[in-house]
Length: 249
Length: 201
Image 1 (cartoon, rainbow over the protein chains, first blue to last red):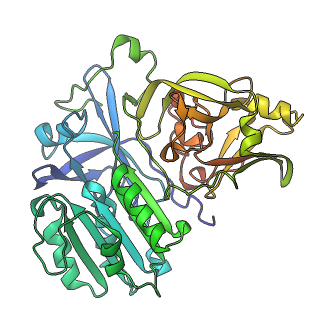
Image 2 (tube, each protein chain N blue to C red):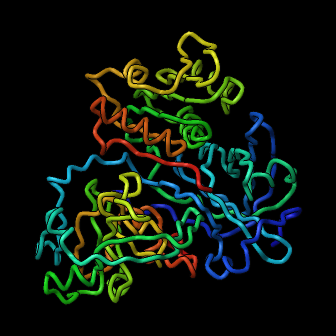
Image 3 (cartoon, rainbow over the protein chains, first blue to last red):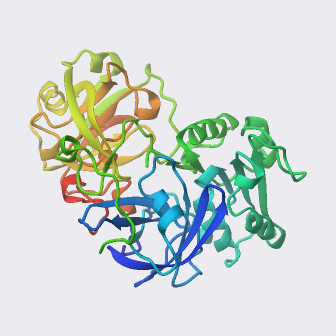
């Protein structure tokens, strides 16, 4: 454990919504301009706080989807949870110009340090693609030539968050491979799948004599449990696998 | 600063007394971890008590299970903002571990270690006097691996990352040494009632 807390975290501060846009039927993209922006590592999250007139407040954590090169703004992608307290606000009420409070960026565990130039396997389930979006966008700015593969499991083609941008990044970046697997829809591209992630699928994306230096898995608990077990079965060392589980929020 | 159009969802008056600021109640039991769920062979499992680098007592799984078991029902609070009320645990109090090792806490700080190399620091005052245990059972059955089984530290009055999963040792340290999450920006103590989430809180 050599990495220490290198970045000073910023406490609560106001941030103005400068973009709010539908990405998929369930996911809204929100771009925030905080009073004091600071750089971060792709994979870090911010906390968002909403406060009612009587002072009651609710807070949630959201992974940043923007790259640190987008100086001055933070982008997050918010999935509507039917029984949610915070996510419906962003889908139904928030407008450009509204102010909320944020803190962070926080947490230096589930992060990608491009300077390590390690080959990377990213496994995303649903809205678990959020931290990987920051990493893919960051990769376009940095000199990095180790292979990066994103295997992204989504319910359907229309529920793939940032779909067009991921396809564009793939055609633009050498050594970035993006594969969608659709659990309830047919594959649209030759490299895509239409089933749940399984060992054969992962094996087709890696070569056993050059396992990824680092594997990152993000999604629901069920997705992370299943796919990280598959990685262990393939022989990827546990110490090279980082996980982030969404849900319960 | 109030947020235009946000009213929020209030806990019941009874629950409100028990939900710390910035938390909300959940009735399921979310799982969070830094890496894959480790594969633990109980035949090879052991729990070691250390003072600094020096092991002072080690238990096998069978020996550990022969210790006095204590039941505890507590509210737990995760730094990701969920709280769960009235969770039922059984395990070995840290007080009973110390008694079995005939050890008086030699320092004011401890690190809990786990099979996959995670650690978390906890002040000794938060571990003793019936406040913390090594939990082996949850809700009447053996703790599942996703929730930290076969054994996890339970320090219910601190944010739940302090209740390290897959725990296999407790080490007394002379200084308050930062553990895994504490090195990555989280608070050294983690009191939910004081919202000690991140390093600067």
